[in-house]
Length: 457
Image (cartoon, rainbow, N blue to C red):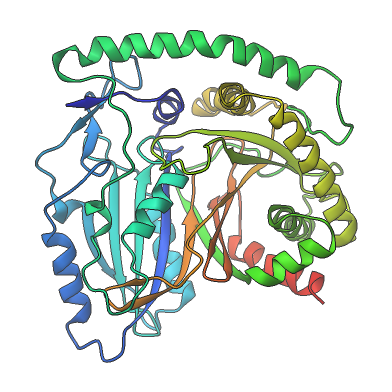
């Protein structure tokens, strides 16, 4: 049995190179259960590796990994999965604090996923200073989007510390996706499906292009090519940096309520404030405000997930404004105008518009591949996304999940990606950046915490 590959999934496959690695990941940090025993972690690793019932999508691989994302490409089931390869065990050097954990995750995130196998990895990390452990899960974005990945992670975590039977991540069944093609006819059906999808997208893409370039609508609406040139809009390398920050969710919501802003608006304002200080310290703050690409889910309520289905909007981060409250007002005006524009689109048009926003970056990648300078203009400077997570405490084999941090992808001309994930009364920020283009990434995470402390007074 085989499974077709969606249009956006094919884009992620097409953009995959040894520099622009299109995998996403999550870092889960656990505190140990009471009296775990000396062999708790080794037994946990043995249990995970002994799991044999690998379910979709974790048992899918590309039928022709060397052919690229063409119309004949599809997902097929791998019946013989080497869990010794996919599930790995690491240990931190003493003292096992956030610095050592961040350095290890940065290295793991810098390694390309093997697309000749099911494109995912699970790393069990021990030696944390609290006696607990961490789990770092990588998956290619063509296989799973953030929405589906979070659903799968939640299904593998229990709401009770006494539940020791919840399925391992890759044994939890994924949300079902209709399989349009089976058996020997699959390549031809897949090619036909791709052609039909392309034809259906044409009208939507024309409509999205018109909306993007016509000088109509709110003056607060950010249009493509309005982002200033920054140090983030450069050719990226193969190495990554990763940093984290955790804030109080209720406090963020209360601040937003006082100012008529959403949680996303407050988060974008904090990111803008942190970037303003960060770029000022580097002598690299542009006069115009930075622009973030903000993915927006186009799924209906109750959608079980599966595949990549999302739109995107452009939002000002107000980095030209020193006053945080003025910056928040600018962010709110920008996102309201963007939401109004998106509301006038159908789901297909929203996806086509997102592709339109990203298209210049993919074109720049061709220049970056041969070492040519990136001329601009730029649709956006960085990506900021928000993935909803579980709102109650979760456990794995008796260990409490303390934090869950997303790690995302980088592109040429967009060397920084900040992903937010809510969990049990906290908002967890994962900062992923190119090692050379975004120096001292942990400093940016610290500045975001300081920005929140200042605004919450």
